[in-house]
Image (cartoon, rainbow, N blue to C red):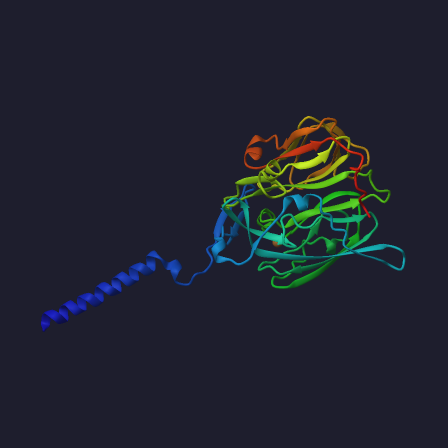
Length: 351
Ligand SMILES: [Cu+2]
């Protein structure tokens, strides 16, 4: 009787000690709070993120993105005319931060999006138009839209955070100056909001228009898929190697105009080299006279411009970062130049 009582007490002690040991070994299983990771950034700042490489099995909201469609897609907004004759262009932009995208085979990344894609839509207006952006933040964090260009202080998207879960803000300004400009979220820590994908391109056309051309947009970006403040992949338009595997088809003797914007985070520079040709380069696109005739430009973050060129000879031509590390990690593509026929004339833009 005494023996059985003693062994019963020992059993209770063993169970209690095993249970408490388990609690200290796997405390994460109790409570299930998202784990915060803290990094010291390149600039010496400290950021904390709950970002994770999410397993797509555990999320319903995966997204698709077609870089070929994005390349030549321009959003001119809902157009109406004000009593004084000014053209009003209205856009609705919705921010979200819960989507997951397969950015490379088997690599799933939590993207933060404007209107569901990275980059967000290419917003296009003519100088002097009134641009009105109805911004809705359906994310779980505060976000804003900060446009480069000229506008009033309260339209700058820096000191007016838009609340999570449906917060709204209306941005409005006159389109100015002519050129190609980035827009991006400006909530701190800025690099976290940018590297996840909250950016896009804003084009202001001159009133007199530009020469007809085959136009396209290239946003140079990087993906830090393991959150160590180093990019694991680089690309033109988000998907590494996309335009190498799906060459961009263009024609000989046709003017090609590329709006290029560098949004790469963490690395101080990016660049763009074109094979078998040189291009006229208009920094920021603000002047109608090119500043350079070159096959190589170097860009820091948000630096951008317009490239114009024509190919004389058909064939395959590479374009890529001449920072070889970037091209080896995805920032490379091909122009497939076909012999022109009379039916292939450049499109008119800016209407
Ligand atoms: Cu944000």
